[in-house]
Length: 222
Image (cartoon, rainbow, N blue to C red; front, side, top):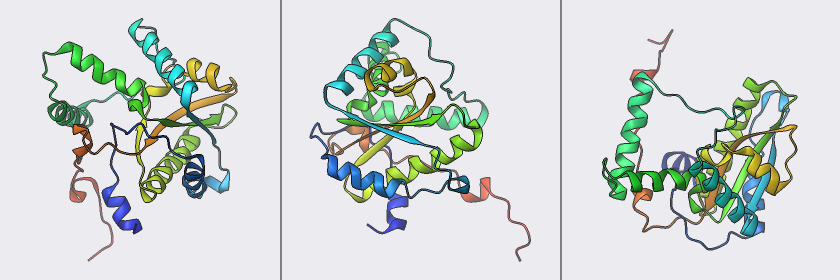
């Protein structure tokens, strides 16, 4: 796949086939992914790839904690939208609920949809990205954002779909326990990965982008 085509066609996949992804294929994805740029080539990341019964256990315990209304770990940042940013978020949610046939008043279906994020959208494999607590948080977040994008584009080139999901690490103590991740490592983000289910309604969504002229300033050009 051409790199420009990949950038244009990449999208979030929220429904996956349950076919397992071979380890050697995931290795190829990540070998390309770690070519991602980082400040002074610091490569401030660690990668945990989880599948099988361990991933099932994480999904189950995440849901248990969510249903018990346990507080999210404060070390994991939540997105707080307001103004135009909230409008974009609400537009996306409306599109997704429409595709999934979830009505505004249907609280049970809305709750079930939220739970999917805490189950990594039922993907057969999940990639957990972590960083050392000893590192300065702001540039590290930037570097891991670059890594995340590169992994997702690499996956697309191998016929895999991905969904970047922060919900999956909002209870980091669960993943720590099942994966042996030490307290010295901060869980930053999760990437659900697998073969896209073409029949899953939400996978047809093409999210919009703000026109370039609305978000860019050009200086010194004729």
